[in-house]
Length: 228
Image 1 (cartoon, one colour):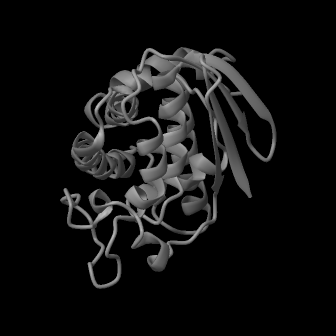
Image 2: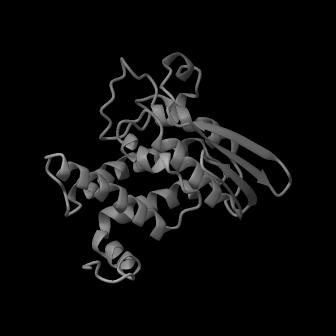
């Protein structure tokens, strides 16, 4: 099961990527990646991995080719982005920042990073170019569905979303560390801005959960109170 991305710049230069959703971390291949992917290089403060098992950061290993491909390109550069998931195809003319944000997100969520791996269900139902409202709605919906199954199967359900806030606080620590990794290798601003946008969307769940809930309430309540 894979997701394909093809990004064509306005000068017709094209970049293609195939993201296998169930890929495994390969220590041998990881050793051939750049120095900035080393586990201890700006290692996340909440990283549970040990150097004797992972000499390189799994997410950085998976991201390094994309980061280097767009190294030095401006975020405002226009691009035609084509995405194929197992279910459908998407195309959009966007600023490079938006296309990269979508690509970086699906790669990170399907990496062997144990923190980012909690976002894997979203990646398996990938929605390219999602705006902030779509991101919030999908994230909360998936989390509450999991809580329903916890409840039904006799486990404690977190209906107050406290676990979701905690989860994204951990993701935020990873994003902050990655920001430093990317700063070390990027000359232009496309990778930086794409990552900053991704960071901003995920951080909205930790700093303003109630605000985000109120934004989506009219949408989910538009069919009535559901009491019938």
